[in-house]
Image (cartoon, rainbow, N blue to C red; front, side):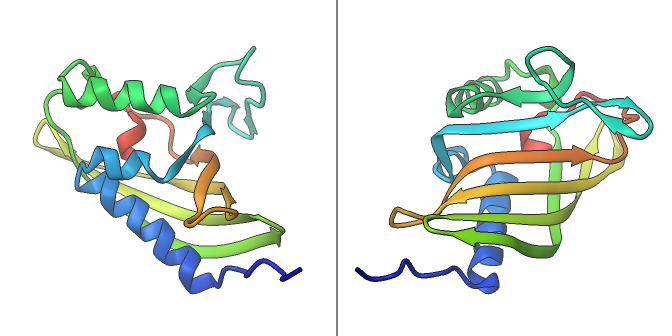
Amino acid sequence: MQEPEMLSLESVQSFLFQEARAQSEKRWEDWLAFYAEDAVFHMPSWDDDAQLTSDPQSEVSLIYYPNRQGLEDRVFRIETDRSSATIPDTRWNRSITNVEILKQGEGSVEVAFNWTTHTYRYHQTDVYFGTAVYQLDTRGAKPLIKSKYVVLKNDYIHHVLDVDQV
């Protein structure tokens, strides 16, 4: 039996850049195609200045969706102007740096990176930054995001954030 092919750092970076670009260009169907049906999206809140919440079922999270259906609902709200976080229209761009492959196994890759998002809304530019850890399923024709764990480092914000800005 042939060993599964390991992903290179370059191919992981390309995957991450493509996901960010689809998001920035508001190509929502393309963006959703990066996520497995059972993908978990979690952005915990800070319990205090040094501790993140850990249980999205019993503690407050900034964003939590237990599967892709939650992301699909957010996209529907964004596209139909039913998302207060994106009205008026917010312009944004996300940059990704310091990409690392943390571990690779048969059919999976864990990757971590830093991100910065610049947004423009209400004639004001804001900068959000943090880290992210993705679990990728690599068993199919293309990788799929099984888990997206995002830490927003500057969480004292004056606008509502949505999945399209992190």
